[in-house]
Image (cartoon, rainbow, N blue to C red; front, side, top):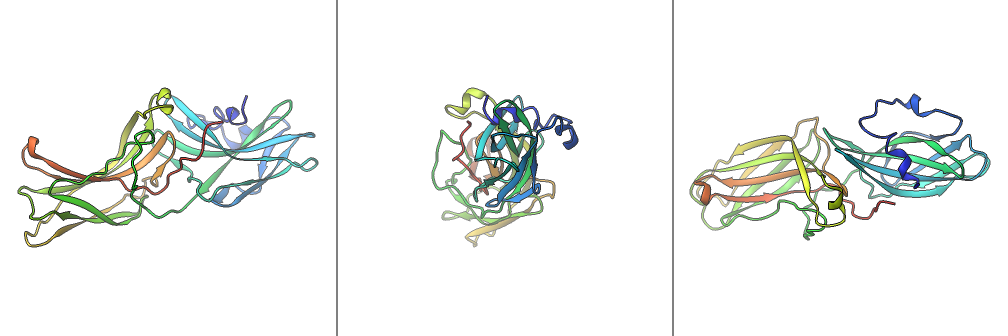
Length: 278
């Protein structure tokens, strides 16, 4: 059994267990604090174990019908007081909860003879929004393309609740006939088949929020601006291995079904392809 395997039922987002319910028995992981920022050192103690204990910082990606666990850092608890220090990477993803998925962290310890009650912690992080410049069909499928007569330019993105998406639709030559509307949405996505983790990903998505604005087109202007205010309850944009919260923009020229044109962009705030399941 791996260090990560014991946290699945304890950190399941369907579990109603409180912190008090975790402290069962004599052995427990105790943290100096519960809130950390990416790049911090997680310090604590393993209590109730007289001998050797190994400690791991585990990231749990919870999704419908399946979880994925990754070890972020490892350490050995000091003999005597059981103290340990775990280095939280500066690129660590933040703790996030959505409607059906959650990304959570716990410090998990194991001695030679027993598993020890873990301690959950919260991680916050900040990053500059960016558009990916490379495509990887193995890793993800993102909406990102230009239309024949226009494309989307994004120049201000605060990809979380209370933030905003500001940009413009830029024409190629003359504006095409027909109205153009811009749609923004927040998608909670997860790989819905375990087998898709090892091959081409198969993603299921649920829309948490969406809005659409018609563009005021000036025939003499080279672009038309848009701005979306993001509701406070939305999660930050995070791209993990098997779950993601994505903000997607699409601009569409509405004419006849067969002649519609669409441009799309999916800005990312965090992405992490370095961790692997133990």
